[in-house]
Amino acid sequence: MTGSVIIVGAGHAGFQLAASLRQAGFAERIALINDEGHLPYQRPPLSKAYLKGTGGPETLMFRPEKFYHDNKIELITDRAHAIDRNARKVALASGASLDYGHLVFATGARNRLLDIPNARLDAVRYLRILDESHALRELLAPGMRVVVIGAGFIGLEFAATARAKGLEVDVVELASRVMARAVTAEISEFSQARHAAAGIRIHLGVQVTAIEADGAKVTGVSLSNGTHIPADLVVVGVGVLPNVELAAEAGLPVASGIIVDEHLLTADPNVSAIGDCALYTSKRFGGSLRLESVQNATDHARCVASRLTGK
Ligand SMILES: Cc1cc2nc3c(=O)[nH]c(=O)nc-3n(C[C@H](O)[C@H](O)[C@H](O)COP(=O)(O)OP(=O)(O)OC[C@H]3O[C@@H](n4cnc5c(N)ncnc54)[C@H](O)[C@@H]3O)c2cc1C
Image (cartoon, rainbow, N blue to C red; front, side, top):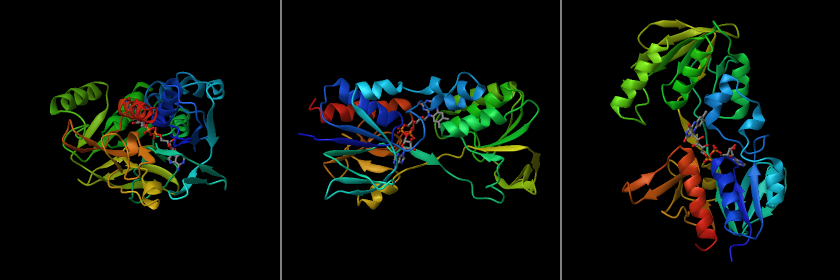
């Protein structure tokens, strides 16, 4: 028997696991530890419709509060602080602790922070969580000049949205093409042309070396090729770091993710890891893989729900 399932992290993976377990008839305790001050919500609109200004935060929520109540999913607003694998306990930041039969890390990833001069100023922003998207949507105004650092998915989506809202947009990317980590050269070329046609200036093969400021006010960025781009706002999209520290401190093997097998099980048979934080064995790709996508997170969740309910 599995016993209580405690899920750390209430993003796409954590939410889906709780919902799929109940759907599969799992009758024991499910607790979902949520360290964000909102009901579990979808991230993709944060750089798209929500950023544009469509709808309020409630449009992002997977389910209303009643769903958790009706399905006996305990949504605990807190942060998992430490894991004792021998005693099978999760210590929470509030001082409370939870016993588990099976523990699931669904801790996702966090923004990789820029480490250059003036990178901590207020007009240097990131885009991962609802609060960041909401603050940006309030801030963006026609005519404002924004430099986006990083031409990955998030950087380019932000750039397209900002341009559609009438901002002057420059994107700076170290690689020689946009979205180089994720798509083929043809898709890069197509996407770059679409952004350029919208009036977005893309600077490839260069690095931002410093953010320039007048006191606390951002005035622009300096590039490694000696040029300067004026800016009122800088948005950083230089990738994420998987949240593996809690697992590592609990003595579980981690590398560029929490290491799990093809069934998403860690080295401990009572602990799984799913979604953006999981570095899993993929027979199909013949090696280890960590993916940052909603489909991956929800597939992982369904897979673990099936395993825990004996399917
Ligand atoms: C702006 C944006 C747009 C995106 N657009 C797309 C898209 O169009 N298509 C797509 O497929 N993917 C998209 N993604 C990626 C997708 O959102 C992620 O792959 C997905 O959210 C991963 O889900 P997850 O549950 O693994 O992690 P997350 O969604 O990151 O959730 C993890 C949760 O765990 C919490 N947590 C971490 N540590 C603790 C702790 N110790 N205690 C309690 N809670 C903790 C975190 O705060 C977070 O709430 C986008 C991402 C962003 C940021």
